[in-house]
Length: 408
Image 1 (cartoon, rainbow, N blue to C red):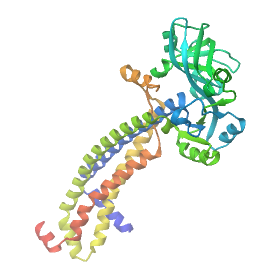
Image 2: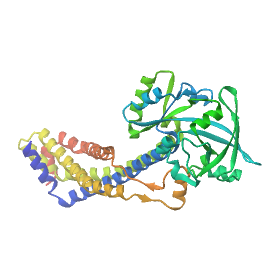
Image 3: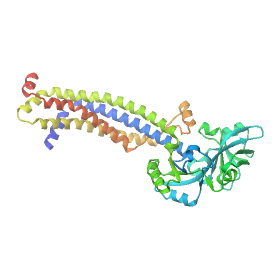
Image 4: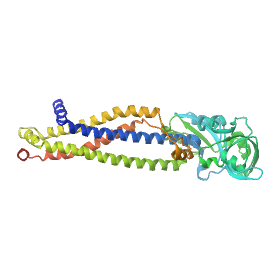
């Protein structure tokens, strides 16, 4: 085998220009593919993290059947035992309670339908970082008796910090929810739909307003890495039983999943076109190597070399070209992606505005997920494997006498 490897290595450098051109085409194709996929996967990860951590969390635990109707009557007891059971699952960083309801928010002359969220201010802020988005006033504390409202709602109702806002809505089990509260702060939310009508209350204040003492609609779960969502969700489903429904961010935000899938499909198509072009280049090189050496193959077979050994040499030659191109690509690509990961691309203009409206930071991050690298290497080996069929076919059906006579 060592002799065959030496022969193959010498053969690919008999025509240095052709080999360098082929290796270069693989190098630039793989480098471009690494750059594109790293940018795509990095953007998806950032999109997921920004969207999930701004509101929904990675996983939510509700009462079974809650999500279908989202009724305030389908609440769960926010007990310490349930919280501890959730937080005992590996990869769960935190689980905090939330009570969501709706109501008519009103000032002296104006009113608007709004979403009211009862939160534990300290725990909520660890995920959503609401305190960093306060543009007027101050953030809530557990002892607060007031609320913070979104800037869009503030502008519509013409209310500011220290003004009083009134709410009326439906409480727990058909009771009427009514209350008036001082505005302690105004928050600017990146998502324009949320910013038009969002109200945050301390959890106990919201429970009193809704008549739902010690109850809530969900525990919001934060993980140390979103890749563990399926594992944690399965563990929680098994541990909590049928009394609760455990939903991941994909089920809660299907529109985000559709955006990612659509964009990813476009990226895969672009990579497919790129690799088709490279495949023709590799096939052309292998075909020329085969045609130019038919007389050589004929002589070798005529003097007693088995065709199987000749096939092995040709296979090794093609693999060496592929491996050489991939190694050079990875050698240049990894440092490049490390640099891009440290110095992310900052977007401006309409592109930045569009991302901000979706609640996503306007940057293009890069990923170093191992799947980026081995998928590109696999693609090159697949192309080489398909292209190698031609010379193997020619060798298998090679007529030594005809090959020697027709290539003098």
